[in-house]
Length: 392
Length: 136
Image 1 (tube, rainbow over the protein chains, first blue to last red):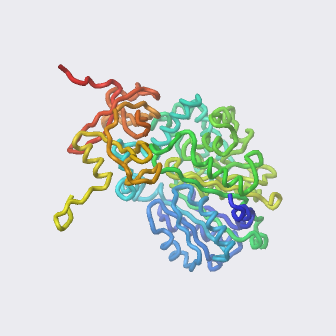
Image 2: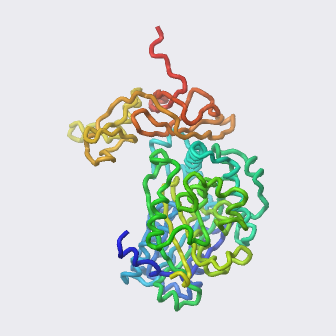
Image 3: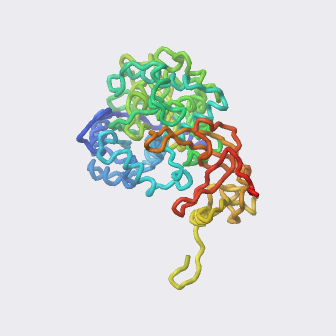
């Protein structure tokens, strides 16, 4: 990593965060959910929408999404980034935003997302159908895999084969997520869930059952990034970006060199390198859990345990409330929210934990957090390490 | 294909691959520069960057690298297999193992490629039991 990238450590801070409409918001459009999230995040930062001169956003459906968002918010940004890497996008927006702030291209960047996926008329089925034409995968689509689900199922099959990972260990991930969700008033699924419930759930694409899959919800989220100096002058306790990195090696699961090692090894290395930290120094962990296998693989690829030991790591409530590592303290995509792309919520929950505003689920004295986004079918990986003033 | 002047123009490799399949032939690419095999078809070699890819006929032998059964209601056609197959030539592809029930397909199983043509569209599937070469 270049010395100038390392100098970005702590140069920017997240001053405002918000979510809107998580769960079900019938009657709202993607844009309306985004706008409510954006407005609330800007207010949380102690700023006005007219202070926003940098904009990052992405949409599952609209390929030119930055333009209608800028129009809707009524802003004239000098920095615009529409990087679309699937669910990891809103973590991947951090590095270009930090560079833009450092260069003086802009002074306040709004990163925002909204989706009415659960309630929309033009739903997942139609989006999946259109994608076959607009975003073809001609060497996979003819076999009718349930994408993205079947890709993760193939990956899980390989992880089980190579390392002896079991369905029970995958179920531990879903049960841990639900345990956290039960302490989060914002979470969509807060009912009790047992290992047996997951093991006996309807199988969709072996070895993944419906309870190994993330939710389908509506919802939006936004955060505001400013220079570290400015973040200190704004009302909320600032949370600084210590390191971040993004990596993509492939799009299709059939093009992965090794199904059990993801590009998170590279995005994580870049983020740790910039932060000058290791996994041992992370207090709170937010991982994009589109499926239970993701959590195991990201724990491995981001250095919280050795490759192949993710299953053992989560056993006996290892990542549940009271376990040895707090992972997905909002309930994650499995139990809190998953409006199409979840990445921004890893950042928002990390900031909430570092601000110390998480109530019952608060990790005491949390000073560092990792937020990890995933996109496609374990295709794009983006990692951010955040910290309070104590670790700057 | 021809251009407006009636001159022949070559197809892109995706069309060329599919036309071979439609005629019942499964071909993959090999790079004459770095000698790597390439799948899926590319306009240039993703290993060395050179444009020296030629079509070769793979042996058709493969091994199941990863496997899933997509659950589907019986009235919709029932459960079906999706596998990632490693070919002897060192490339990987998505396909399905077609001649045994999905619950019998396991990682490490040897399989053999076969081209099916449905409504003129060729598709590579794999069999767990090698087809007889010639029935005499």
